[in-house]
Length: 223
Ligand code: DX5
Ligand code: ZN
Image 1 (spheres, rainbow, N blue to C red):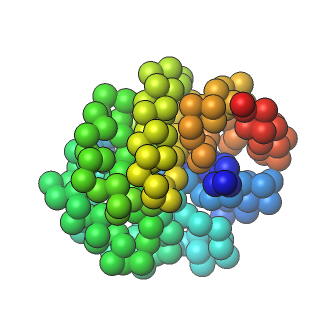
Image 2 (image 1 turned 90 degrees about the horizontal axis):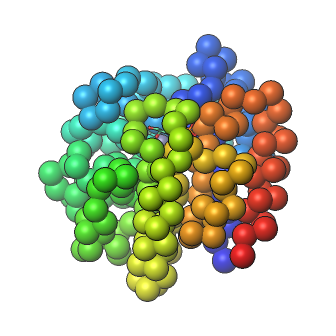
């Protein structure tokens, strides 16, 4: 069975102490680092790029870095992220004219690849690329900001994608991003997710280990 991954989003970390924040959250039991890239064009916010990913690697971070591109276009910057130490690169289908080519570009650069679906984006983009995907990321908020509330429509979408993945027989992670908290992670798990992004729920709190432990305890209760 696929191992459950907790993926803290560094969007809510203290950027003035980013290396230390990432060390702390990994020591507290996180599995991967979720790295949100925004361009003030595809989404109305501006964050971090390959230089910061590279800086985290140079700082000594060895955990997988899960780069979530909320930028348009995507292709030009993919090799830069691969060189900077990205492990997984996901992008939104609306942001690439040639989805299949972009997925292949990510793989050719040695990273795992995935597609991200906004709350209003239909799932048909999956139809001809299931064999290429390592990850499917469903947004449970509209992308651009941390600290928003989980949109319940994501639960039904998770169930649909879980079924598609299971029927396909491919080894694809199902990640959820936005508004994930200790008190809703169990139903999110029950709907089919195995990779849980959480920004404000973790970095907003004083004890990261307590939150991550509580999240895992709730996941373990899922039926
Ligand atoms: C939103 C980002 C998320 C964000 C999640 O556009 O993709 O990764 O950091 O933050 P929370 O967990 O606070 O909703
Ligand atoms: Zn994200």
